[in-house]
Image (cartoon, rainbow, N blue to C red):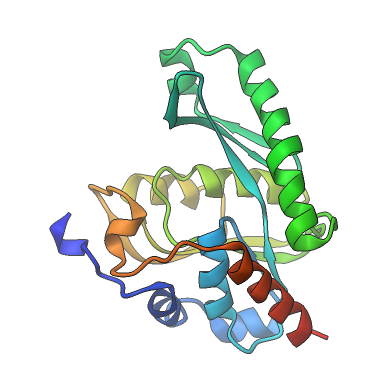
Length: 222
């Protein structure tokens, strides 16, 4: 664990290093859609994109936690209401599926729809049929964000899907590799703890920062 502690300075540093492993010329020529799967991932994605004209989006996801443990994520839902379940935890805690689907609907109605109206002025996530998609996040502790995003994107029949993330657990890397065309990463870590540990500075993304990135991207692509 100590070997990788603060291995990255911040999201900008991580992005610059990822640009060395992502085929940036191919990304530009094939007009890949860059899709962040978290708010922190959005800032990282904006640094990866730089001055390129590729479309930058954020796919909104929300965690569903165990009834009596707010720290235990048992499922995740996307803005298109695709759900990925952690069957092992659901069975271990004897959680009813009615609870999972009820919480997924509530999270979508109360949280995700508010994000869509706040940050995207009510516009739905663009359809990715026959498109090339690069999913981006600042790290991946369990793979649930990427798996939920993948379920959402693959249902739209894209041409290809890639993942870019600076750090992720070795077992999550093996899992994700079976679903995507390629994964661009810097470090796969056996004893992964939490994403923040691997950054010296990982600032919380506030509303103003998110709106700034999305509005700048819209302006740059006009």
